[in-house]
Length: 133
Image (cartoon, rainbow, N blue to C red):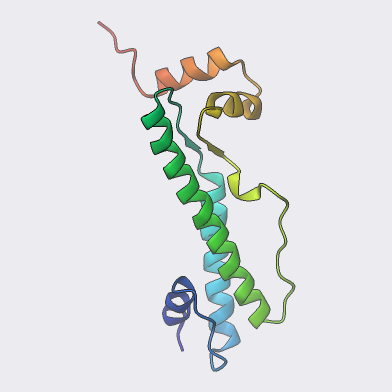
């Protein structure tokens, strides 16, 4: 069974078949690990004050958090198949670089070490809210 089929089975919450080769499972594990690292390093910032906008940001943040947790589960299935120890990450790991909900700006401010006002101002500049004219 090739890497694509193994990965497809993992995404479908199925186990790795016993006939899968160690080489293919290792390839899948490395690919999933890179995907997880990419997702952990990609920031998600959703700053809003209106209730419905905050809920939309929460939906997006929770979707990203669950995606990261699923990736870790799939990686651990590969590690188990290869007789490697599973990764046990500290509490809150899946929320790294995710800032959403009513406390998003404060969370982002603490992580960056900047004042809340500077975080908001830099975000406005980044999103081109202040265009000349």
